[in-house]
Amino acid sequence: MVDLHCHLLPGVDDGARSLSESLQMAALALQGGTTVIAATPHANLPGSTLSLAAYEQALEKLRRALRDYQMPLTVLRGMEVFSTGEELSRFAAQELYTLNFGHYVLVEFAFDEQESSMTKRLLALRRAGLFPVVAHPERYEAVQETPDVVYRWMQAGCFLQGNQGSLLGELGSMAFETAWTLLRRGRYTCIASDAHDPVHRIPDLRPVREALLSVLMPSQVH
Image 1 (spheres, helix red, strand yellow):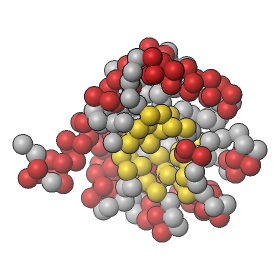
Image 2 (cartoon, one colour):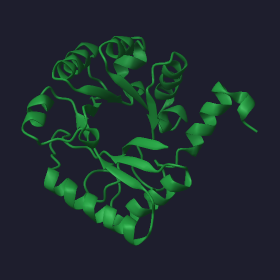
Image 3 (cartoon, rainbow, N blue to C red):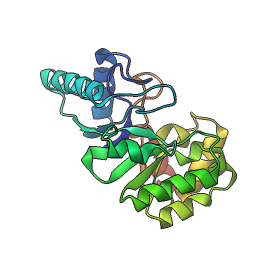
Image 4 (tube, one colour):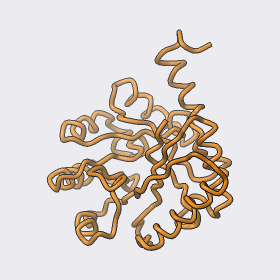
């Protein structure tokens, strides 16, 4: 499996606090069947900025440790980009990473952001030739109120990434209900861990896989 949203890098955001935690998370991911992870720390939350130099240093530290411990996990570059309307200029200045240097960018919003603002910024990214992958849309109040707003984003060429924790009921009842609504309506492109640690929000995707199979393909679950 491929996990496109994981806070695996050590000591750069509110994810793994140390290399030890990163390796514990890597082990959990591998145990769950994940072989490729995009390391997507928060890049530009208000009041904080992650430099590409700091990102690269943490990535090399993690990759070296994975090699030393013979852990066959491929870690790709990426960032969870907080949308403020300034992200296009930040990309132009080469201050932010897309997913694996491609045209897809993992985008998050403030949970109380207005739908009109989100749509405006997503469309601006599309006009610039980027394909937004909207992180955990089920956690945004505007989507919780009107889940069908995401269809307009999809029509414009955006993609939706659901959180494992939302589908398992670990991120609140509204996120849980909205996540299953979006799933049943075929709105999600992928499900990711959005893992932050090796204890609570973990990168082992087996629980959500089992939950999805039991609901969507019950005959295949024993």
